[in-house]
Image 1 (tube, rainbow, N blue to C red):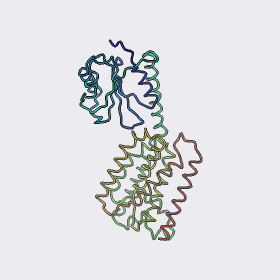
Image 2: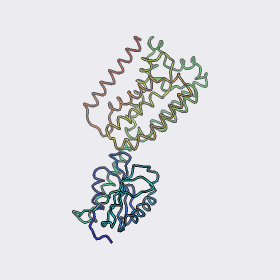
Image 3: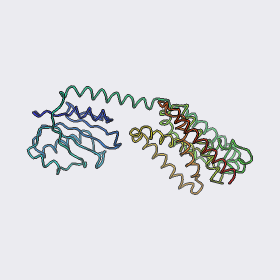
Image 4: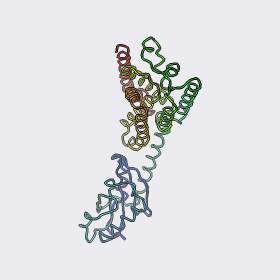
Length: 351
């Protein structure tokens, strides 16, 4: 039994209060794994031990690492805090080695209160934070995204039933972006390209990206905000292509980059949560884009992608997150979006 009072649960509570999230508890309060949401990829392992020798503590730490299956964390991302009596050979702690590189610290100090008073407070606060996290992704159900996929499929199927979407004539007939026709007044071609694709492979890869990204963004922003971001980012993407590219173009990738822009805006508002949610869908999106670049080569419309990315960021600022209520910020983003769109239209028309 430990004779020196230690502050295991008090320190855990302080860490949760600072934004940490409890990932697991090894009972009876023997060890606890906490994710540092501020750092984004750092884990803290809190361990209570009654061992007297450093090598015995090392065996304890390794056994607990295995219990939590921490091999997945990787090197330099684990901080171990050991709570217990003074060790006979405490100086050896700095030379201990573990399967995962970890920073080890021995905690020994008197507690302000009993340990039992901090555990329920830490657990309750952690659960409250997790409930708030769930609410962050509960502002809408992924409905509009599936409607978009259906409409885009129907357009693709109809176009293919009449001709081939690999044929420029079919693309022009179904609303692809064609600069001279836009100059002549066919401004609807700034909208229709996001629903048209150049071949089934192009369609499939963009719809998979929409299926990967769309539900996440729609849950974050709600269906109405999601629709505004997607559609207007798609328009801004086409306007950017109109300004900087002479080629015939079509595809939803500009609007999809708009969803990435919306996630970037969310990252400015909530960095820690952004680090946990953006990675997988963003890497999918970028990976698919790189793959498409190899297939389509120079025909990839980079100006539309850049325009969609910026457009999605601006439109996310215009509609705001569901729990944002700063009207001045929205007006600022609306002004920026109008100026940017107007400038791109002027460049395209006067190129």
